[in-house]
Length: 71
Image (tube, rainbow, N blue to C red; front, side):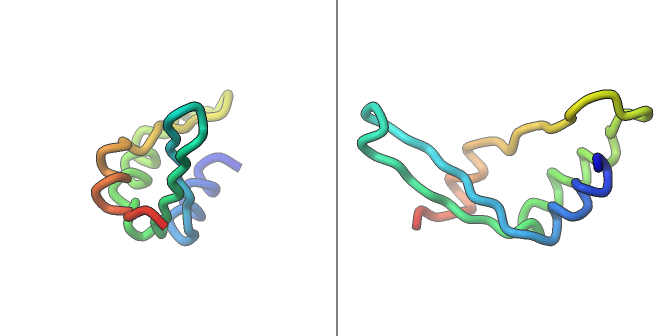
């Protein structure tokens, strides 16, 4: 778990949801981990050792909106 999971995340797809109007509008966006490599690489570089708890930073929504079109 931990750093291995982040490395795995670079190889799989990720879904992002955003919503509006009290969930009346829901957008689903997809990005492959290879598109997110810059974020995952930074996570690995700053990964705490020893690993004490879940460690995850978010992907900026502006990036998701620009790079992962709605489905």
